[in-house]
Length: 486
Image (cartoon, rainbow, N blue to C red; front, side):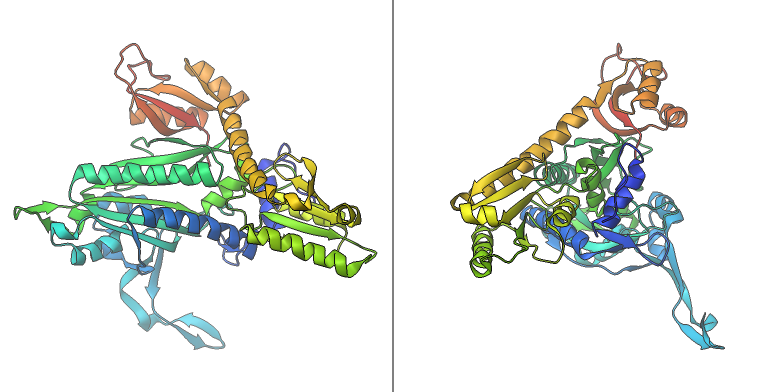
């Protein structure tokens, strides 16, 4: 088994080693693409199914929209097309022809209008909303889509930033601004719940600055998370779009008093980037640590009976343990493959399985198992008739992982009251920094140029002239969180 790089030596290399060595994903043949392998897809599926239920429970319905979008659709919303233009993959022809033993683009198959491979679906969805919305009775319209999108990235990293990735994107239409804004905030809470209660990742929730806002949005709210190298990762966003897309696609509705009114919109999404967050928030030098609630395998059972002693009864004992745990709803795997016990211990530790149960002849004879926790490395003996305690231990591991990550984030979050102090912190310790900002694009850009730190989110608005901007010393308008980010 390959030895992974230590976090302290090269965090970026450690991250890639973990993904490749745990069989989460591999590189695709086209630069910037990713193959999600079965173990990685099982992890994604557990996250997806958890979030999908939360989305459906809040009154949204799943649908699917085409991958191909007419270029003219993107041109209808100026800010939107400007934000995505550099990342769009464009289809110009419809077929290939064989010529001299090779395939060539058929010059006669040029499309009348170029087609954009979906970078996000606002435009095509609002084209359809125009057909579906005519009356107040049609509102609110709350649609979610699970799909892939393509954004032609130049610098890619598995799960965090790839040219094609998997995600969900919600799109809603509302009769009033207040209702749409409430939807935007409700979804932020759904994401916060997903991250904190299921992924065991603490979050900072806030509003994006003008420069960091989603293209075409009036307001963007984000979920910001801290990785183990103390960099920030924007893990999810929820956008209040105002009437921008409704107006661009001429979507209006007839009110109860027969007035023709504009439609207010939201969009929101999270992606396979969440898997990257899981790795970098919880992982250590031994590999992954997966929260029990979303781990593909919660308990791995490793039988140790190389001499095949009392083989039939030993095997029946393993089957009994497996059945007891399965009947409790625990996701288990029995590793009875070839290989030494030590090899298997390392393998499943690397894969981040929350609990490992070792069953050798000693345990078999004493009617026990040896229980090993991945979160803190503790080993304990557990009687066979106490297997019901495994559920409680899994719950404790989930809580322990969240608390550990929260303590790490709190320990590495500070405040700065001068730009000199601010710069020193970033150069020596690289922490999250809470500081006051005057609200101007100019100041934000200068701070980014000089420190490479960006405003992750606005956490409070300021109405106090004694509070001064960290950089310009002008009256502050906002309290924000700065950090270097992925």
